[in-house]
Amino acid sequence: MSTPSFDDALRRAVHLILKRTPLTRALLSTPAGFFSVEDTGMREVPVLSSPVPAEQGRLHLHQDHAVYWFNEQCSVWFPKYDVRELTGDSVQLIQDFLSFVPHDAEGGKDRISSRQLMDTLPYPVFTFTVNMAVCTWNLKMEGYIEDTAVSLSDCRLPELFLNQTEEKLEAALFRAAADGTSTFRGNLQSRSIFYTFDWDITPLYDEEGDIYAFSAFGRNQTRELDLEQEVLIAGMLQKSMMPPPLRDARIRLDPVYQPAGHVSGDTYGYYCKEDGRKIYAYLIDVMGHGLPTAIQTAAVRLLFEQAGRSSAPLHERMAQINAVSYETLPVDYFAAAIMMEFDLETNELSYTSAGVNHFLHGTTEGTASIETPSPFIGMFENATFTTETFFLQDGEHVHLLSDGIFDLIHVDKLAAITNYDDVCSYLKTLAVYHKRDDATAASMLILPAGDVQEASE
Image (cartoon, rainbow, N blue to C red; front, side, top):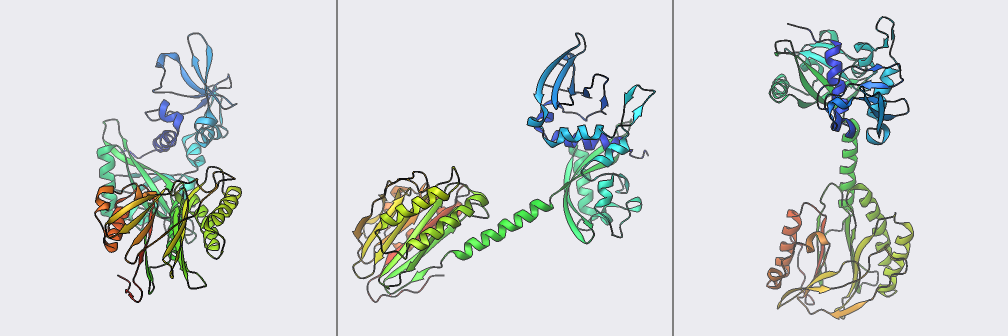
């Protein structure tokens, strides 16, 4: 049986690199050949399939980073693309390979050996037999197993990847043989540090068309996994900042908090003010998703926490928050929000909105949407807001919602719900099944004086 050569490994590795860039995905659909430097100064790459007819010529990479088609019949160069705009580091990587080319006087061209090109790759690459014995590898591969007991010259895949069983590796090889490629996750250890790689496996064929070996091309996922872990921790920290359900002799407050991902652009808060007479509550929905939005959400949340301690009218507090947000939020970031205060002695509810255009009001006759049209926070420097008030009767309830929940509400169904707990259950159900947007709600029930209810599980 044949032994895989550096030529075999090189062809597969370079093809995998090229296949991951916009330009080469359009130009190359089969394994790339070797590279040479023409006397014209053009750096030539054989093109096996392209968006132009093959007879029009071959793709060349010029030293000024431009890409040209060369028509051999009329010897004319046709500029096509700027490599740096379309492929970034991958084509620059190929050009860097060529700086290592030794001169081949007999051939009249500068050529590079397979081993040299393999060792120049910034990715670990190796080949192995159908019995999983490692055959050839590059210097990058050696660097990821330094100071370990593993010797690549006498090593099988189960010994190299301790997090993989032989059965799982065999399954990956069967998939590669059947589909032409497969991927598995395998860890490498270097100087007591573990690195996580995704390995792309492709089969190598002999002249009879039989598989005699496989090549493996490694993509380091360690940084991505570390970042994912940091985002998970950020999400846990966000959740820990959310206040739990609040129970008082006159009031119940119940939240719904369901991020679409690990972190959320929504937040809420509520607390009893220092005078003990008023309950302050707010809900915020910063536009966007992911970690950048979560960071902006934390900043806006701090402004609302501080605003609750003010005695100024709500619309003045919202205007102050808007002024600060307009100056501090990055371009293209803005937020929807609503804040309210409930007077425990008079049952008066005051509220002002900024981009949250609805909230829910429940009575003995059903639950309805109250419209609150208003500008967003951070969008207009001199935006104005208004404070609205009305009185709540004992047993009535209000629900502040982000659009992740409100957009899913069926108005007719909601209108028939009078019980506070039933409304809360309905909102929670909508939040759980909404996967595309953060879903948040803060619900408040007014209790008759002296009617204390325990927190539900």
